[in-house]
Length: 472
Image (cartoon, rainbow, N blue to C red; front, side, top):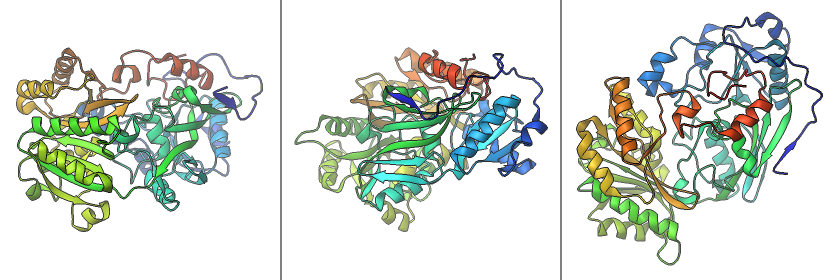
């Protein structure tokens, strides 16, 4: 069995009728069952709980404006999570799960009030062994990495928001991140060893998902169960060298990154050990604090490279016509007033731009495999100053895969639809960051595995019921 039930439930006693938007919520009766739990009804707490980084999208910022939970509950144990889940089911109160709120798609915003379940109080390392750790879902990734490094280990990957984001939030909404060049995407076998999930049944179950069953709750944004603990894979710690390489044009930067990425994937005598590999064109680099003078109006690669691979990495940079402008450990870069490579990757680049230019937004693009830099060159010519390119190199399913998070000089929603159609006509896949509907954001189809699990784990549809079309 790839999943197992930690607690055997009794017969379901709840109504077969799902929650409907606009249904009267018996909040007073519900709150009477929260004795001893940390909960907050103040406007400040409710406003903070309804916020995530969906404001990166002007479309979502408008669509989700003004939506608040009725109260915030901060459980401190898995038993308290089950207590809240049980009360939600009995009183038909909607529940929205949140970690640190660093996601970009509005899944922390409660569409119909109810409870915002703040998981950051569940932040313990339960157990750690060689190659793995079992932790509570609310632990901040930076804190987990620090605990792992004390044992000579580290996480295989993390988002660029490592210092804020929780592991549970990363599993629930993440796809890849810093480290994916070396270890693949989160969904690749072995990166996540198991999930423990509390359901919204009567009574709630605690279910452990293993193997392929992990995908029932991974990347479902907390809409079909509450992730409470995780067995996550670790690897030996490395003192990564953060490298910035500069190039005379963006096509040369892409070609160099492709060459390096292929050497990482190929293994053997010519292999390079690279943890992060990002390319950013020169129209974006001025947004990075502390780097404007050093980048000298050139296109760039930002990378994290193992010490033993630095010489080989730099040789590939020189062969592509580039030069190394910055190299050092994360601590050395920070001491010099420079951002580490981590903060010049993934959506941290979007954040850096938005700090000074609220007229931009972004898209998320997956390129056809094998990747062809010539396609990007054609797109740059087609889009002109409307789209500024930024690419991330990773592995997925053992193949070298290239994603883009281009900045877009925003005009209106129809403009975004036209850009999406243009990328798709080139054979690219768009993971639309301007919708909160799961099936519209990625593959444009229902994930039947997640839908089946939702029918079991959330039979009343209490978990942000309009997120996703997988209604029961």
